[in-house]
Image 1 (cartoon, one colour):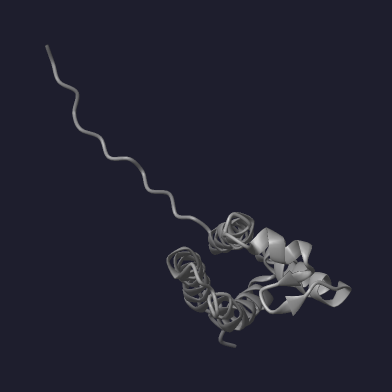
Image 2 (cartoon, rainbow, N blue to C red):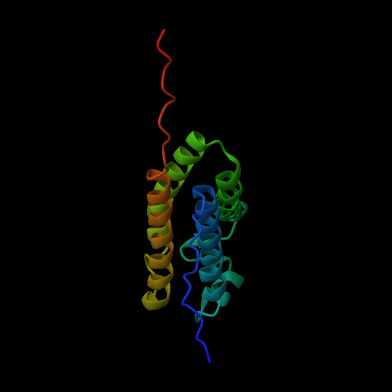
Amino acid sequence: MRSRPATTLEDQPIPVRAKLAAAWTSFMFLYAYVDILGFYTPGVVADILDGRVFEFDLSQTFSTTALTLMAVPIFMIVLSATLPSRANRMANLIVASLYVPVTAFNVTGESWLLFYGLGVALELVLLAFIVRCAWAWPHTAPPATMAR
């Protein structure tokens, strides 16, 4: 019996836009699932029924802020796939950098530090990946000028 020669899988390069859109998608899912799974933390649902989330009163302002914080990563998925490269790079650098303190804040005052700490750590890894990808966006050499 003849053995087949070993083959190597081809490693196709992934465009920066696709990497960024995938990272924002992963970030958005983590962000949402940490909140969803947080409902299973003892006392959370009771506090919500009493009109409080963490230290905040449930209000239109709270809900609008929460929606805005979730909408930004959702829009970054689309923007990462569609913006021109220069604007794309800047948007990803700025938004990901602004989300670092927002994300880190989510662990303050939590009693389930292992759960929330893991969620925040994973989100911060994704934000660092986004900043790194945007920072290292490949440049093309300017076209050679024609001599007259």
